[in-house]
Length: 105
Image (cartoon, rainbow, N blue to C red; front, top):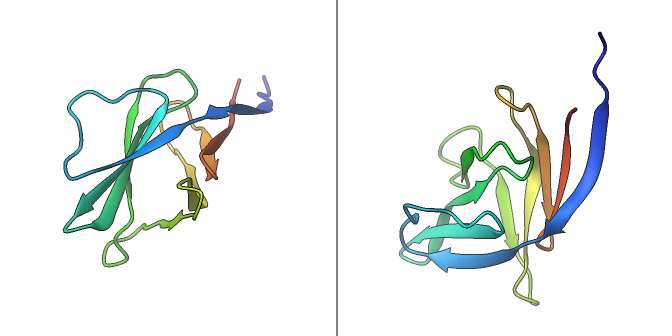
């Protein structure tokens, strides 16, 4: 059986700069976790509905690492897309707080 890929814009998220990752993540929030004001990782709940909590590395010292852009309008973008190789196997794009999902259905 061949599975198709379904692409969908999930929703527009809000983002919050925090000094520590919250114990409980709101599913519609992108948490920019900082140390001394410098972003270290982005935490979020997978938008596919699997409820997996993701911690995406922003430190170039460690690989893989993603680039976070904080825009003048207070939104964020993440590059490149995040591809999950286990579980739901979703690919997630974050562009100006708009989260787009491409996952197996």
